[in-house]
Length: 171
Length: 341
Image 1: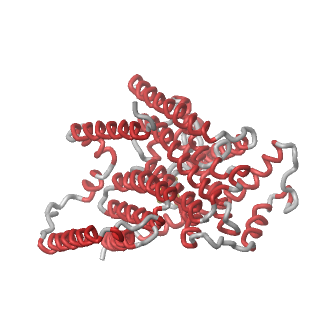
Image 2: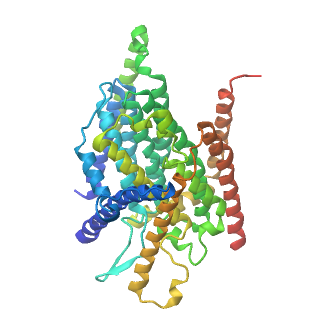
Image 3: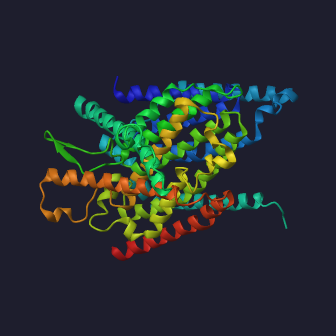
């Protein structure tokens, strides 16, 4: 077994275990902690796929910024004292179990019936180069300029929306 | 294969960790000595000549203290928090080169543990994880002072990360790379980024004070208001863990400032002196440590000279002064880069 495979199984198992733990833990703070671990192991998988830049950005954006805000909300609102969503609504519980089972079998089907499509063999140096920030930057402002700019526009709109909502008085 | 991929990195890691631990314990000693000098006192002078063995005495004292965990504390998280703080503080150093590549026994050795393509981003990513240590310690202690300290610190760190990131972007424009070794070699001669973009240097310096929770921005642990802030409920080695992490973060902040703005290990025009390769390399490594030492002195000096900001002043400074200034610096850097090319 090559080092890459060992690393993949290492990170993938952490990833799978923590993503289950996120859902089953009762204290929201622990769920948040396991989600952070999940993001970190995903970043590890990205590194084994030669996508170093994506790995680092994954940690900065998801683990470093978004989850901190989540934690903030959890710590200040103390949701463990809130009543569970399902206790007052049995129909919702049945519905969500149904959706969950459906998605689970769909995923199983995809894994069993799907074929692995990575027939292309690319030289290792080429693969390493595509994960570097220079390559991604060049692609973003040439081939993917329109999506890149529209995402920027979307983020600007979201920022303005947040500002409007956080204003106390509407005039 | 085995030597290149396992043995050499392990030796480097060992050297870096030992160096870090020694520097951390001695920066505590110097903090006490310099504060004594600033306040016209004598400072520690009992353990060894002029008190130079004081750090070891401090460590042993902390080791033998009782470890008290509050009844209401969330035990696993309470233990995890200082470990996380130390993890972040010590892993960050992996990408910072302390000198030029040197030849030892016919092998070219890079004087950083790893020289990765997105090294600067890696440092930012790891330091952004440092927030968790503080928020977890604040939340898990089950004390309102700790919680307030944790919340304050996360707000502070997020706010100042923005101006920090924008200041770094100015440096990246000149270096045209995220690789630490490229950033350092782009600042040859007197082309230090501190000279080229002084505003960015100042915003990064200020932001690093805020990120390391040092005075004048030490609101997360402000003693008069919060007792001890996020580490109020910690004792023994767990408290020492936070203490170590704070000083290790200070060293990392200094190393980052040296790497990004003060030319890293470079000494201007040392090549023209015609020294032998070995002597030149060791002078450059020495220059790196001298620069870090000067910045550490600056950190300590500021702590004992400037009073703490009020919380609203801190936020105003972060968002209304530092953020626009760092944007201005980005524009300035872009214009300068256009003229110079």
